[in-house]
Length: 147
Image (cartoon, rainbow, N blue to C red; front, side):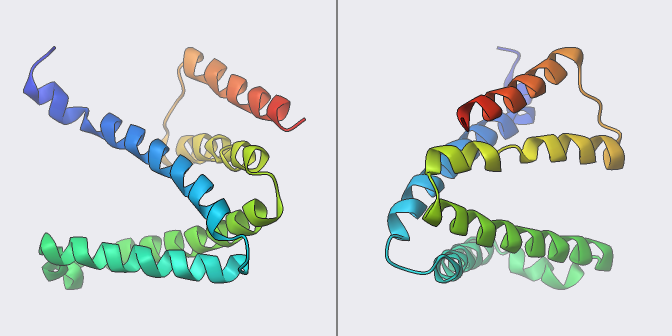
């Protein structure tokens, strides 16, 4: 153990793991929940629940006070991210409602390839050789899983 400072600096790893767990639950619970309803309606319900939870968190943490201090550029990109999220969710819910979840999810997770490419283009983030090999395994693993 390198001390509390390193633990605090790496807490994002814990959040990333939790994100993966919740994403998996999202897929399974979503598939169960959309048996008899339209996938677009399911997306609306999911978005409404997220909105309520987000507002509760913002109110409890008193972050609502900074809502008018948001920079215009940040607001534009957060809004564009929201549009992308909405489009992703609409496509995702349609795919899991009408498809096989165990096939849809790996294909959905191929977004990592796009993220890596955009991270390189926009943030000049480079992959190590071992990370690049891992990315190739993800792509080929996904291809294998879909057949």
